[in-house]
Structure formats: C-alpha cells, structure tokens
Image 1 (cartoon, rainbow, N blue to C red):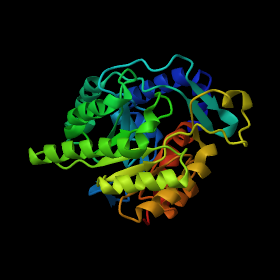
Image 2: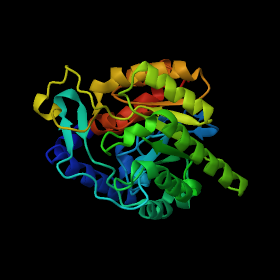
Image 3: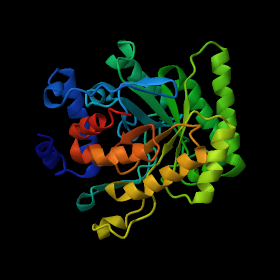
Length: 345
C-alpha cells in the first residue's frame, strides 16, 4: 500500500510532498481511518535516561517542525517522536528550492535552515493534540531546539535558554541542536570552551527548574557526523564534564560519498541524509560510544533503511535509534520492522 502512496507523493516536488502528505496523514487520523493502513505498534519497552520508551525506534527531528502532526505520527509505530527544530521566534528558513530527493540513492539533501513558526506556535500545537489532552498517551515526545539565524553566535545561549524555559514542561526530553549544517556558524558551538559554556548554562537552568518543583527533563545534544576522532573525544569529554543526559549521533552530513549516483542533485548544498550516510554516522557512533565509556546513552540516527541496520546501530553501542529519511522511502512498515528486530535489547 505505501509503495503506491509513495509513487503518488513523489510526483510532486519534495517540499510540497512533505507538507501535504503530513496534512493528509493527520486528516486520515482525525476521521479514524489512518490506523486501518498501518500495523499495530510493537511494544518492546526500554528505559533510557530514566524514561520508559514503548519501543526503541523514534522519529528524528525535522519531519514535524511545528508539532502539528503528533497524533498521526504516533500511530505509525514509533516509540518516541522528536519535533522541531524550533527557535524562539518564527523564521522562514532558506530560499526554495531547498529539499531534494536522490531517488536512486534513497537519500535526501536539505538546506531548510530551521524554518519554523516559533516556540509559542509549537507549544500551542502540542497543547491541542490528543497526545497532550490524554496525559501524553503512550508515546514519548522530545523537543529539538535551536537558535535563530539572526542571533549572533556569541548570543546563541540566550536562544537556547529561552526555548528550553518555554518547552520544559511539555517535553519528555529536550534536544540541543548545535549541528545543523544549514545555519551559518552553528557547528562552531560543538567545539572548545564555547560548547562547555553553553552546556553549563543549560544544565544550570535545568537545576534551577528542578529546584522550583518541575520534573527532571533530560538534556540531549545532537552532534554532526563531519568530525574526526580528536573532535569526537573532545566533545565526549565536555558532555561528561557537564553531566549531559544523552547524545544523538548524528545529524546530516556535508560530505558527498563517491557512491552517489544522482550526481547533479549531489552537487546541491545542504545536509545529506539517508542510506549513503549510514557508514559515516555509524563510524562516528562507534567512536563516540568508546569515548563516553558507557556513561552517557547514545541515540543513533543516520541512514537506517532496514531492520538489520537498526540492529547494527544497537550493536555499535546505541541505546535507541531514530529514523527520518528511511520513513519517507519505506513508510510505517520500516518502523515496525525495526522495533520488532530490537525487541531483545
């Protein structure tokens, strides 16, 4: 069924297809027919960061930037959803076209640029969802936060603190996105004392909120795949020093593997996701797991297109996995297949 739907979706340009497929999915869910087309979610609970995840397979950030489609997406079999990236105020992102399918490579290139409606709008959408009204249901929600493009890098912490303060009571965990390749200078926040200072201030805010009576909401950092071993070790040391709760490895890559067959589209700028980056992201995962020495859990993202690849991420040391591009190409079946394969973790 999904293969037929995909053929229809792929008749449109990538961004138009993205927007309208989510709208149709949510409409089908609202009238009660969406569940007829998908498998029942695999229940295989796993506890990570003190959170009981219904299963180990999540949706990576970027698909539902404004949290408009939580109710429909949770029906697809995910154990957790990550919405965003959201910034303090709305911004349009980069100029179109900015999203490209590399069909033969089962990949996507995007240079979206944190286009979103702002944190207030995202939270309004969360509050209106059945997930929220039903005491969060049985799906974990992460909220991915970033900085506005107009905010100078030296003031980035203010944007992260603003978002964190506002989303804190609505998220099961919060992801600090410092690794998108599509916001100028953002990846500089992954390095040196700038990273330590950012994390320290976010942890101080977390402690402050807990002391005020709020629940403890884990903080997760999302890193890039375009890092060498020395950089990965330095990041790991700083994550450990600041007692960060989790890390996602990885975001999209600026690199272009020689194996890409869609040569013309491969020349487009932006982050590459999907099958061609599986090996790169898995190598970073292995180095990060080694550097962290089991002291911080890692969520693996990047190129998962089969249940076997999800298992490889777990075998490499990940505690959970996230999927995005594979979901675009294979639909809900991939989620259930991966969750079934990971039942034993």
